[in-house]
Image 1 (cartoon, helix red, strand yellow):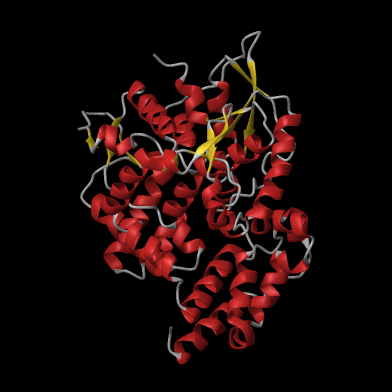
Image 2 (cartoon, rainbow, N blue to C red; image 1 turned 90 degrees about the horizontal axis):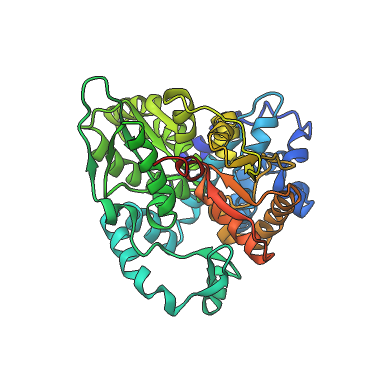
Length: 430
């Protein structure tokens, strides 16, 4: 725990950032958590009022405060709709960090964020051991979605329908890729993210296929650490910094033109949060992360703006496909048109827009773990919009959203397939 003097300074600095909130209620209209619970305390303005009284709340019931702050997906819908532009996500992350520094991080979270995710070789080893024996715990839940469930682990996982761990990870199949760029050739760092490496490997392979088709030289490390957003969302900046330091050690000696990821959450973390938190490491790290951030792009944006992928007219009998705007991708990065262009580059599909395409799907990273009942309720609204569109396939630019979509579609026995945007484009390439 910080000293009382340090804690007081942090609380005062946080309090100074709350003054711009006008209590207008615009956040209420767009908040997926409020839509599910109907509770004012779950709206951004309610949480900002709570944070304004944070010193008292810490002293009276810090555990309850942590729970109230945790009832938020950090989707950024409130910040995107805020008339005075209050940096709500920054305030919420800082508040969570203060609370968990005060309480002390839960031992399981400390193990995961500071030891497992910050040590890629150990994380990779644990996944390689878990994949072959997962059939002992999991059983098929829905053939159409390819999901499984684990009744024996309901106490921990709830009634989730999830994707199995890949039988072979992306890094296990390809190892470290470090292709030398020839004169005039683009060199990219491909950062697949944890899910892209260990669960949605077909998405990762589609990205590699597309990059190679366009004659892009690739660097992909076999030992990338997590980007750090799960730790930050749980209030563990120290764990995030350990993961960041691990990734910077890999990237500091690499020359590249772009860093691309197929995950909106990873992209926004690397582009926006790495420079913000790197100053806590040292000046060298801050300079390096700022340089990396300037080169970081979502892969859809990279395909359209750099590689000039274009939309094509759909074929006569094209399969209807709809698109879900991932929160970090649209609300944080402003990337919305490009994924649609990537989908429309395949004439075998016809894009049909669902209602509320940019409304949060309900995943929210660790929110899904600790508030699964609300996560499912929010996800059901997304599922209803997907099905109402008449689409046979729903696409997204974030594997965490894909996981949530598969869960809710599987629970409803819907035959709608879930695919990443790049997978759709890759189908056209030989």
